[in-house]
Image 1 (cartoon, rainbow, N blue to C red):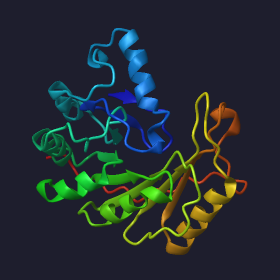
Image 2 (spheres, one colour):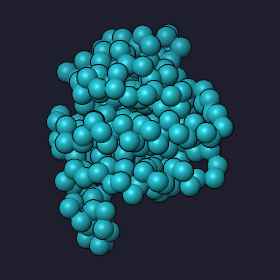
Image 3 (cartoon, rainbow, N blue to C red):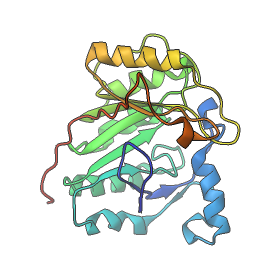
Length: 241
């Protein structure tokens, strides 16, 4: 568990770590780079670097939080990776089900497995489910997301690597857009972003512009149309059970 610098969440929780690349958006994976750093620092959880691992002890952590939080689940992994057993995914969902005072944001590129397993999972109100889409080739992930039972469904269009064209935003509650950062970032065109922002406006979908990215993402900032866009779905919290 750690406080997060990610603009659209408050903290991260990683009951699983490690992943593998499945599409072009994975090329410069932040989590993979960070895993190498943490291994070099001697952090036990990352001793196997970026191999997929489950962490039973991490399942206890959300029960210890005293105040309501917005939590990004598995910033260092993908909960729907094929190497993570359904039984462990169900354990993660049980923790989220047991803690309705927190919002849990789950994000995957593996939308097909998400769709395959979603009826085996309990979708309480506080679980927000999203898919990552970096180009038009991967828009099929949105169609899979649309079919699941999460109360809030969102898209992470980051790193946005191409013009997406028309996006079917039916039953989508939130769209996050961001450019790639790092040593060799691929460029994001402003017109791609503006087109998405306009589509969200037309469909009354919350729009969050995370960053322009680039080698110096802080200097490039996150101003679009002369302002910041920090829209989010309404957060509905309940008392713990």
